[in-house]
Length: 112
Length: 114
View 1 (tube, chains in turn yellow, green):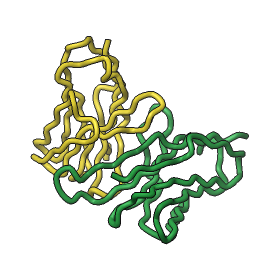
View 2 (cartoon, rainbow over the protein chains, first blue to last red; view 1 turned 60 degrees about the vertical axis):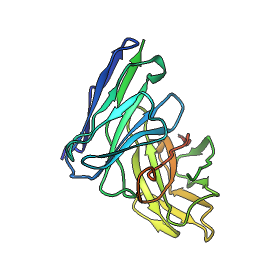
View 3 (cartoon, chains in turn green, cyan; view 1 turned 45 degrees about the vertical axis):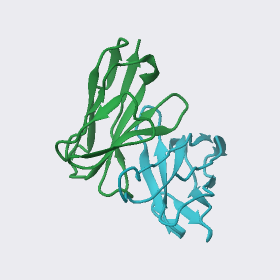
View 4 (tube, rainbow over the protein chains, first blue to last red; view 1 turned 45 degrees about the horizontal axis):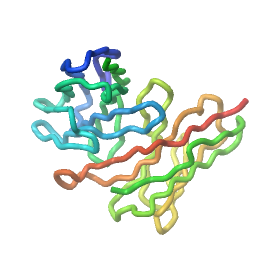
């Protein structure tokens, strides 16, 4: 099993550009989440999904969209990038909502 | 949403036992307590989870008093490779729209000294 994979590893955007961060898992987990981590800070929940076709907002959802068309994939879309979205983004999956979360390696995003 | 409070940093010598305490005064009845470890430039990794009393696995123990308003992660005989940030997480199983709110907080940076 590859676990949770994220692409790209690094990305630089200009203000106003849009892009999609990819996340995939091969563990057949129902629950998937996106977090952002700013320097010296903990992780903050952006959006999450409890199954294909079901998504909901987390703590900091503004400026981000998600969809879950398959169990395996959970892409995160930045609609119009802003410097405040410069961060490291982690995707996670778990079998159940209170079960162990498995994290991907992260995507380091810089918005100029 | 249960808020957690942990020490910002701790130092320990190799071979010592390390105890990191997390306060969660407004923990809800169905909330679990979970600890994660994070190394630089990596995603967090699960360490241990518990609901009450004591839980032990091959890497750590988790002590939870009867009132569940705090919990203590115990790492026996730490080594240099245990230098990392440790997060205490409090949350419940998903029960409907908007209910899945897990907060990592800033964590505790543990530095193990040779």
